[in-house]
Amino acid sequence: MHDAYPDYEYKRITDITVEDLHSMGARAVAVDLDNTTVLDSTLHPPGGVREWLQTIRQAGFPVIIISNTYPIRAWLLSKKFGRLPWISFAGKPNTSAFFKAAKMLQVEVEDIAMIGDRLFTDVMGANKAGAISVKVNPFKPEKLFAERFRRERKKEHEYLEKRRRERHGENHIFGRKTERNK
Ligand SMILES: [Mg+2]
Image (cartoon, rainbow, N blue to C red; front, top):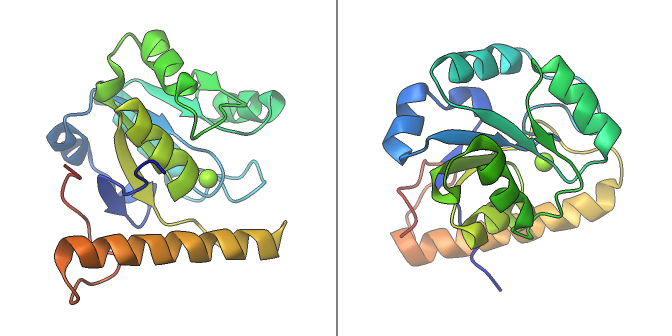
């Protein structure tokens, strides 16, 4: 199995600063939709997300949506977020969407910071493609398919805890920002 350990971790997308992106070596930003920029299965970004996207873009970072959702929804959210370029049915953790995004934004895939809430799609896909993987906590538990998601979250949690202990020892505190995963 490919590495699903994130290069960086934050609570919310809005906690990531322009300076952070620079220090990661990012030149472009890719964002997930559900639970990263909008509440699960909705068209509603929580407060601050639209402003954050605007700040990041004004700082010179091109931003693209890379989502496994269906096209109409990605398109609607692209419009809501100020006409971001978007890729739907991305099939994360497959890497093709990341390379397509790099081409669309005219950057190298290594320059892209992929921000998402899922280890085995967003983070694993970014790692496989060679992009910078940035994990955020999901906004709230999903209502749809609650049981399946609960199991997947549990798997993610166990995976992260195990990898953190391997990396940082038994005393590592859950939720701390990690150093670059090298
Ligand atoms: Mg998500």
